[in-house]
Structure formats: structure tokens, C-alpha cells
Length: 197
Image (cartoon, rainbow, N blue to C red):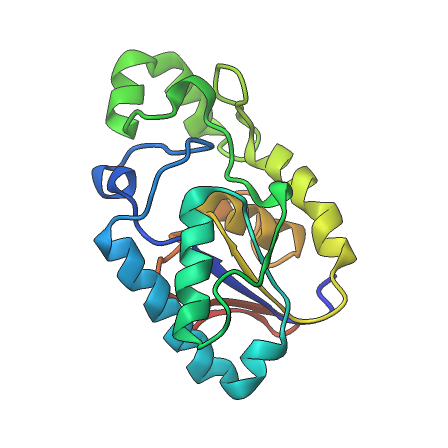
């Protein structure tokens, strides 16, 4: 399905990342580590693409942590930090009632549902308003991916990265929910497969 490379960047670290809390669609700011990771992603992108990086379209989730990452990345590339698009389809997976909790807290307070999720992480939808499964996120991002007609720099979230890889046939529904999605690095998705830069 992929016609041109996607240079995918997960947002930098937030305090909730550092604490292991499920952020989902809560708007959490970058912490100092996250700000540094945004700049690091920009340097890695510059090393990967050279001057042509500035000619690519840039699109981000509209959430604060992704927008700040995009702006830091673009500043590191000596590009106008504000000259990028946002797309709501790139918002993080919604964890519903579990947002703000750690997995340990979820397992303690809601063990039956946590076990159900462990049995099928791809299709399981947590309780509460706004909750989604990874399968639902894949359905949400598929039209965006199908509309791409050239290389793009995309800044979004770990759950979105997993959905994108499955949609593009680069990971299975069993593998993707288990994958670590690094911050401060570039996940290159191209016809030859996936790789980290």
C-alpha cells in the first residue's frame, strides 16, 4: 500500500510518560526530556534527508505534545516552526476511563477488563467515553494514509504508529501492540519495510 516513505516521529516525553500513565487523548505537555527529544528527532531527520527535508509536507496530531514536538523538530531543521498541518485522525488512541492511570493501577482496579485486553490487545476497547481499540484507530488513519501521494514527515503517538504499521502491512495485529515506539528517533516506513533512524 505504501507509495512513498513516511518519516514517523512519536512525540517527546511528558511527565505522564515518565510516570507510566496512559495519556490517550488527554492534552499533556512535553517535559524537558521531551523538548530535547524533539530537537534530537530534528537532527536525525536532517542527517537522514539533508536539505530535502524542508521540501516535504509535515503533518501532526493536533494534541499539544505532538505540536510541540513538531515545532521543536522543525526549529532544529532551521524551518519555520509553525509551518505544518494538523490532522485530527492522528490523535492518540482513546483509553477512556483508564486515562491518567498506570497499567499497575488498571490491573488493580479493573482486573477482569485488564485480562480481557491482554487476551486481544488489538481489538479490545477499554471502558468509558472516547475509548478506542487499536483496530478503531487503524480505521481512523486508513483514509489519511490512502490519500498520501508522496513522502511525508508525520508526528503522532505510539498507538497511532502501531495502527499505521498494521494498516501498511508492516506489522501484524499480534505484534504491533507489543512493539516499543521510541521517542526522539525516526521510524522510517517505506516499501522495503520499517527501520529506525
